[in-house]
Image (tube, rainbow, N blue to C red):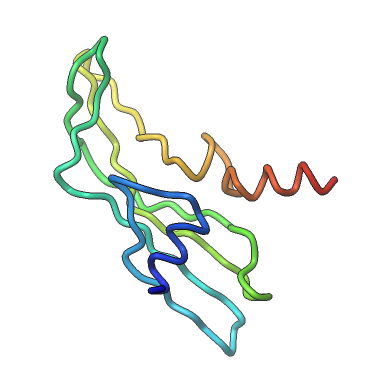
Length: 113
């Protein structure tokens, strides 16, 4: 299995998200997983219709360690413009709003406590 597919399964992501690359710093005991989003993805909902991408913002999340290596997820997340002119960040499937720790990590930690 390719390392990118391994991390997609581990993190639990699917279309339009994908793992672009994985960088391992052995000396620093750190893994950085870069997550990409398909550029042609249509964002919106049934109520308000289609939203246009206003900008992209790089975000970072701490994930569960990978074999003792600190693991961080990095992604450029789209900010979309709604029909009323307001903007919002697209929700990513691996984290909840305002979280630094991904959803799956938090669920595992809650089960262990």
